[in-house]
Image 1: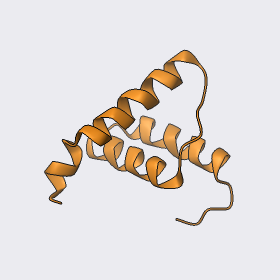
Image 2: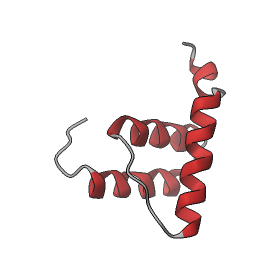
Image 3: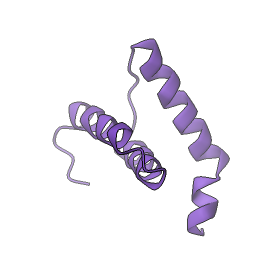
Image 4: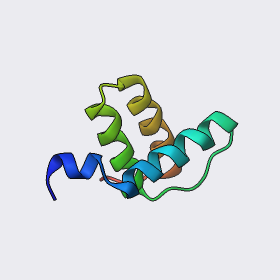
Length: 68
């Protein structure tokens, strides 16, 4: 998959939309480590570094022993 296609994928757009909605509501949902990595990649690509750091914090809280 090409880099641009990844960032235009409906699956990623849905993940980002869902994550932002959940964060805005003040709650949190369990996400797989791979989902967090996709979100971090997306926010970094969009130069939204503070959002990427928020996702990293959530990922560490959810998966404290994951090394990926």
